Image (tube, rainbow, N blue to C red):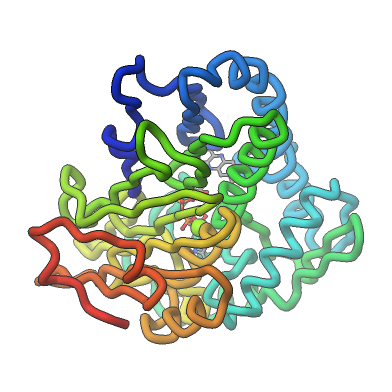
Length: 337
Ligand code: FAD
Ligand code: MG
């Protein structure tokens, strides 16, 4: 996890600390934290939340051969009837593909497999142009279509992967379910995609640490979150490939076909988790200034970039400057974007 919920943010002085529910979903951990006074309410909500998360996996997981996304992939070339949830996510993913001019790409899966990510066999060598050119044709997101409750990949061999946006969607769903049950001091954390409201202890906010991408035991600074804030990080250090001693991120630049190089971590703050999740992946791929311009053009969005080079530098968009508190050791590394 790239974002670390700091203990200072999850303890209520004089009380027994927060009540938490932890689960294992979508190949990662989910943690929901509420004040101890809401423990019963959270316990009552858990079955409904588990059911919703299970429905998301059943619809969207590429790791399940019977999911709706797997059915879309095995029927490329034909329209496939899907749930409202799947159609909504496909439509949202196309919106971020348009906004990022293809840096975010829900059809990127053939390239992911070619690079040996998601459990596929890694290639013996760094892939060359001759291999990548036909794959680039195959990952054309403009050939992905959604119409009310049906989805179509235009050409055989195309494949859909909503992994860069679905966790954010899941966090928003859990967040809304908790609010509907009158819980207002909440933190939902699904594999580093976080959303929270209210606060803990004497603080009307939650404190979240942003990890140093070059030293996982260290944080570079803190974000103070409340009021429905969502934050997501995409990085190159938890999931990556190494071929011939060369390291590449698990995030692919679909425009070139190569794993992204040059960026170590991007953290995005947004008003909802789907937006933060999609944008953190998009900005990881985009040229830094271009990515900064995109978040600045959107309401309530801000970003933090750590390029993959030494000495460590932390680039902040104007909105992030108001929210990010660097650790003293990293104050001199902060730059304006
Ligand atoms: P993000 O930056 O949010 O997303 C990166 C991921 O998006 C990559 O891993 C790749 O899948 C994809 N991607 C790469 N480049 C791009 C691009 N340019 N544009 C768009 N997308 C891109 N993991 C398991 O190991 N086992 C499981 O059983 C499993 N089940 C899952 C079920 C569901 C419903 C979902 C949503 C995820 C599941 N995952 C599982 C995790 C998934 O494979 C990804 O690793 C995860 O969603 C990536 O999230 P992230 O926060 O690490 O990175
Ligand atoms: Mg993402």
